[in-house]
Length: 91
Image (cartoon, rainbow, N blue to C red; front, top):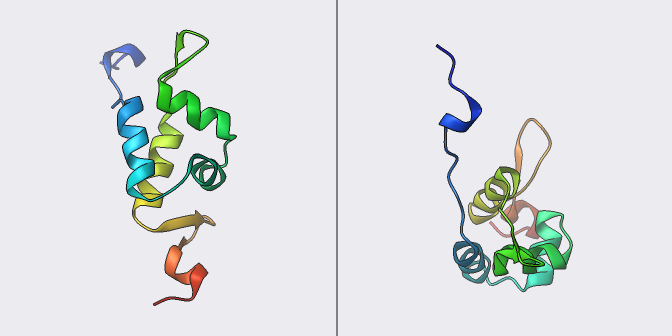
């Protein structure tokens, strides 16, 4: 029997968890936006948890990107990830 889309609840990243993620990486809102490919305003909405009084949910793609950045992965070409040490030359 196939499960309906509503029966599986996806994990939720709260506004507070998102803000803590950014701060733990030492990123300013603008830097987090650049690394996630977003506008700074979206970072502000995610951290506030709403936009014009309406709730804002952090999409799965952004949650996964946060996880990747937390683990030093800066990009992915479909074959192998680019780690932060490869970009900076540190090793």
